[in-house]
Image 1 (cartoon, rainbow, N blue to C red):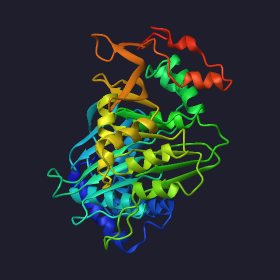
Image 2: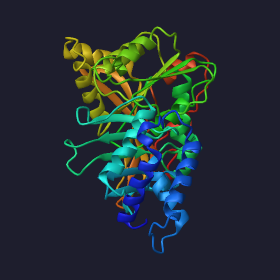
Image 3: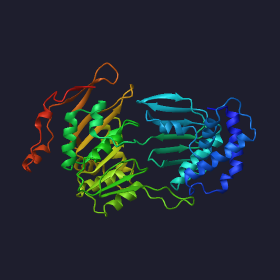
Image 4: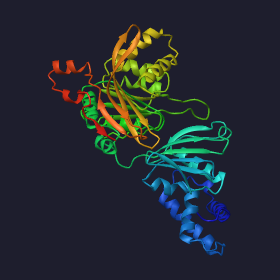
Length: 422
């Protein structure tokens, strides 16, 4: 990084030269704008601007990136080893590599430069962020998810979080190779998706819920029609008959918001074979359960929870958030009837992400939702180390599969079957 004062000075002179604020940089092709900015900045430096021993090409690249690109984040976005970028104000940047957080040497020259980068990101997707609306979710052109929190909510300056979009679509073989799941689990989940079981992926923040949902969604037969619903589009499905829907925030007048719940309701009119909701956070859980209970079998979603049992409690709370006055017994009946399987993922302190529980929802027993565990990850004393194993329980719906002529592999359910170290 060049000396901060030099970079700030050149940044100001470049903006004054180009008068970027009067140019429609959203509509102007970026290669053309970048070439123009590089040319002007080169002229500014050539006029005798003191830059000491700084490498001119590197200096031009840094200032241009900050003026019209994403500044010091450009190099981090190009680094495939970085999975997440966290900016805590202009002077502090952290990254996640292999599941571990570490500080980065990247810095913005000023808070104003950081705000300019944020404005460029959100304007590209038709959103805005300012003091009156200091929270926003957006995405980069490559699909990476962006979250922004401004002052006065963020006391350290603008907070920018980028969860990078994988350049290559992950497959189940990648998760097995990473030790995130066992072959027996994959075999079972593939059967569940193929035979239209309703699945909820649960886990904490950054545990890999969306990644697993993406992999499971890719197992849906290509002949089926899929509608995906997300706050910020992250799912990467290669299906031909795919309709991706994305929620929309309110405009500057506070109107025009389209929520996840609105999209779930509308999806029911689009003749979907499957509905995939990126994440249930509130009242949309009721609409999702009703969709699962009214012929849209094989639907998938994710939700934040600390474990399979905690997920069921969370779903009860989310349904009650819908504003529909339902007794708790009716809510539990809806959940028990709609959900077939809970797949729980965890991120360990070593950075590893693993599927730790696969649980079947078996129904109601004396007003309580009953479950049985099919697979689990048994951790050892070493952090994040352990093995996957079957519990010996056979899912109840396998009898129906056999009655329908299927020949599923029962050997994967033998206690300890599929045991594999991780």
